[in-house]
Amino acid sequence: MLKVFGFVRRHERLSHDEYRAAHAGYHNSYGRRLNGIRGYLLNVRANRTPESVFADEAGYLTGGRPDDFDDRWDGYGQLMFDSLAAYLSAKSPARDRPGPAGLEDDQAVAAVGGDAPYLYSGPPIQFHVAEQVIVPVRRPEHKVFKVVHFARRNPALDAEEFRARWYGSYGSLSRGVPGLLGHVLNVPTALDVMTGFFTEESGAFSADAAARRGAFHACFDGIAEYWFTGPEAFRSWREAQSAALRELERELFAGFFFQEVDETVAVLPDRLPPAPFYHR
Image 1 (cartoon, rainbow, N blue to C red):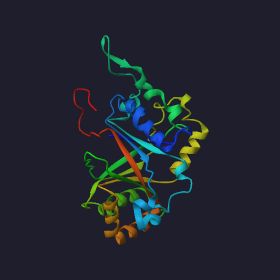
Image 2 (cartoon, rainbow, N blue to C red):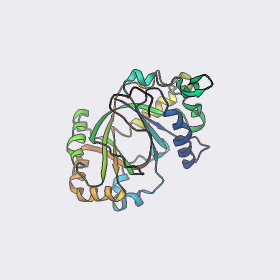
Image 3 (cartoon, one colour):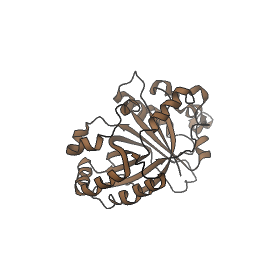
Image 4 (cartoon, rainbow, N blue to C red):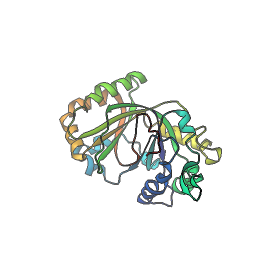
């Protein structure tokens, strides 16, 4: 399964809530129709204050956030495909629109609705991640609490040891936790998922865009995602495992921070072979 993250900044004409409505609404209505897509999630930075979510640990859990980090993004999408080839060919007309002659191609899907110049401020920061599922995600039919953990590697650890210990010893502290609905680790890779997906006209390959991507990637070496029944379950886990969590956080991370996001499931991730008919 190929997994791609795309971090975006909202257009200056949109408020944060207007951006969320436009991305989760119009844009996702086309993104979910990309050819061959196997999963599509939108995560928008939540409006609640850290204190209302993390309570007494708010300072500790958000203290490692770079000062300008929130100026770099408002949301990020997650795209899943069977392969790189499927991903690169996804932005093409979708044969899923009924018309006078029967089923027709919809050219608008190739442009994902064509709203990017009005939805985003600059091109997305798009990159491939290697996914490790620590606890498989279970999604009840209501909104859940999702929090994202950004972390930079302790330079005393090489990349492989860092990833292995984050997944292993640190990840093991979440297994079996009451109220936990899922825990997934994502580590960026060097696989190029920009070329062939974005056009030169998009601005994605300009010097400014490259500098913006470099500055953004310098803020983390891995991104973990947690799904809980609510913030109280997250806080209870942190309180019960406080000593062990903090010890490993000192050993593994040069810096880290947590951020609540509002998740929209546009296409439920499906890792099984696709059905022999159209479905989302």
